[in-house]
Structures are given as structure tokens and as C-alpha cells.
Amino acid sequence: MSYDDTNIFAKILRGELPAHRVYEDEATVAFMDLMPQGPGHTLVLPKAPSRNLLDADPAIFGALFATVQKLARAVKVAFNADGVVVMQFNEPASGQTVYHLHVHVIPRFEGVPLKPHSGEMEKPEVLAANAEKIKAALARG
Ligand code: AMP
Image (cartoon, rainbow, N blue to C red; front, side):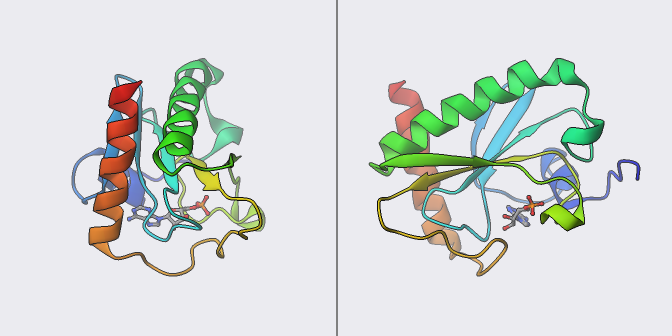
């Protein structure tokens, strides 16, 4: 399958759809997941188009995972989490639902299970407040 630039994340990257953005640099963007599996669930994307990890240019992985690490550190601080899960899905059989490469960064708390993948939509005010917490943690370094 080839990349289809009408996917939701391509539209967010082009500014055609809104998102609660928390970070952007030359090569990557991060924003809040609309149906979080826990508070602070963030998505990190390369700006370069690829469907998923399988067809991506490996040249982007350095920048992508530098941003994943930034966000993993920031969400851990912002939500006082015990740990952080980093997940990434490839093709429908794996659970992928949006076909622009993205990495899930999710704070984890001892004894608290993750909510289902692509489950309930979170309230915009909660996403906005969580985005502010993450931005503040990023700004503190
Ligand atoms: P995946 O199964 O890895 O493709 O995950 C796609 C993720 O995108 C899911 O966790 C969804 O909750 C999330 N999602 C879907 N639409 C949006 C959107 N418009 N803005 C932010 N996150 C979204």
C-alpha cells in the first residue's frame, strides 16, 4: 500500500484539521491523542510522509526518536508518572488505524491499566489542559 495524503494526520500536519499540539521542530510534530489510553497520551510524528515504520526512510528515525525521548521525559514529569510506554503499530492487523507514521507516548502508573486503543474521545478542555502541562514540562527542560 502507498501513502495516502488524505489521512487525518496529514491534514493535521498541513493545518487543515485542529490538534492540541505540544511540540514542533523542523522534522517532527507532537500532539495529544484524541482518544487517549491514559492522561497525557501523546503522538509523535515525522513530517516526512510514510504510511508507517515499514516504508519510512530510516534517515528520519534519529529526529523522530529524539522527539519521542523529549516527550517521554516531559510526560513523565508533567503527570508524575511511574513509567512511560512507547508504542507504534504497522498495518491494520497490528492495530494501526491512521496511516501516517506515528509513535504513541503514554505515561503509566503502577497498578493502573491502559484504556482501550482508539476508545473514548476525551473532552477538548481536558486535552487542552494536559497539553499545557506537557508544554510547561518541555519548557522546563
Ligand atoms: P494507530 O492505531 O496507531 O494508527 O493510532 C491512531 C491514534 O490516533 C489512536 O490512538 C487515535 O485515538 C488517535 N486519533 C485518531 N484521530 C485523531 C485526531 N484527529 N487527533 C488526534 N489523535 C487522533
